[in-house]
Length: 323
Ligand code: SF4
Ligand code: MG
Image (cartoon, rainbow, N blue to C red; front, side):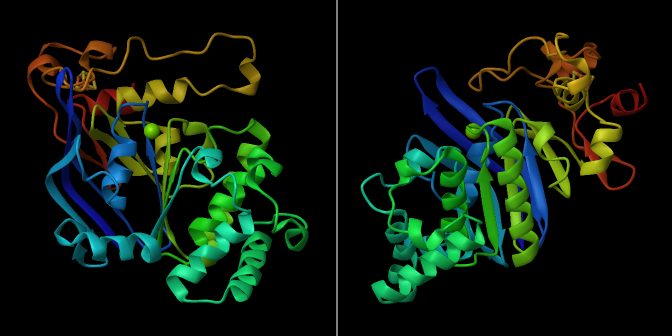
């Protein structure tokens, strides 16, 4: 359904050109969940925004690649056609529901607006659609609450409203960018479960962007790990937990808090992600990598084939996998 090929995105900054996305290739099939994982600044949000078509204006610029969606290259469409795709066929859920919702319009009206604008429904019918949607995302007492304003809902409930909004027109692809990051841990799990359930029910494709490997284990089919604007590892989700094939993924896994290690200091990957205007030569991860050696400072690793349909952009993936 979605095929991103060799995508490149640059940003003009005061420091120079920031290479935010450097040759990303990935795909999502119908009903499939792809988790995109990485620290902030790894290019995962920018990739999502490029797919949604909400960044192609200064200072951001798509400088290469293709985004094939149901057979069409989205980068070749005009803004009008693009907007149609965005409303009806793909939708995005952001981290911060409060700033995405209009504070002075009731949630029912905001949900109903989708049907008024895109389906030409009457206000009255749109309102009952809104109640239906609120039920669907399991907001209790939807009929009574449909006239309430965003601030009258808890953070978790607001995020459910965002999900409802994204689902309204039954898109075939949803992109969720850190959808639970702003929520309490217990609420996070509930919202993630809901999203996974709806995704199965409606057989949508889902791209789940997160910095937290802990939240995707039960939800995703496959994972793409990003670093400095590149995909450094791809694998079915189970394989990555069992045995990562890239030192960066390994570091991320070891940074997940575990209940049995309460109070212990977590392993964190040393150092910081690179400044995207000055990505290190060779393997961009080399200044932080415990396995780095000379070749890593000069030769950029391609995405090597790893058995079982996996990929790793590490010259020493076998060592990472078995070490
Ligand atoms: Fe580390 Fe070298 Fe592999 Fe990069 S290529 S992840 S620096 S071992
Ligand atoms: Mg982000």
